[in-house]
Length: 278
Ligand SMILES: O=C(O)[C@@H](O)C(=O)CO
Ligand SMILES: [Mg+2]
Image 1 (tube, rainbow, N blue to C red):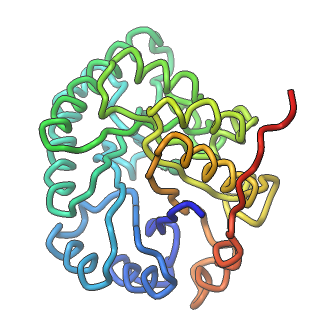
Image 2: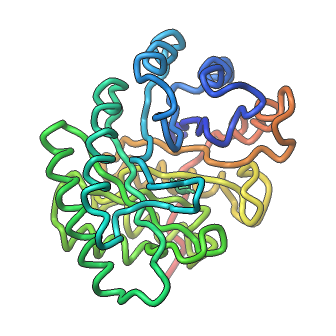
């Protein structure tokens, strides 16, 4: 069975943010991730992690003005200074939280902008961030996101993300492979795990039921099968990462709403899956 991390931005919303650590640990999670830690002192978060024996596995660099609709700065010409300052802050938190991975969101392509100019800015920013992160012993992750959830998001496909990582060529720059977005944008999820995981360029997985982004046992994806594929390929290539549980519990932010929906996790005795015959 893969190692599952609770995404505390989406799970346990019946609790205040700092109380979600205890709730995740009580349900047996050993790792946590979330979008942004910056509204809290790193020392307060570090204390919760230590108190509950949790590992911080991932969080995001500052995304610009989230409340105004921004979804990352990395592809935006003219915002480089802000990108760098945000990433430096993310590195400080990563150090304090002993977090090995920082997700850098690409951003929304401005209407009418030339894609080549955005791509050049994106690659230059990522190359810089990967260099800074390497000195601090951290990985930088980029995530293809579907445009139904984030209209205009710059990076949507797994192949584009892997091309970007290869073009930059930094060993600590990797792809955050969210199976939910992959299924919506391009499908063929199991074969993409088989294609990309052995390359060493996948830094992290995330999961959710499709299309509603509820529990993984609700919707069109067969997660027990996909966990088996991840297990099989990870064992063959030596991958040892985490799978982030990034979904909105179907029952919502009601007491027990997340815990009661974890039947899929308790049942996740994933078995190795064979390649389909060609
Ligand atoms: O899939 C997602 O939405 C997240 O992983 C994220 O970082 C941006 O919202
Ligand atoms: Mg995701």
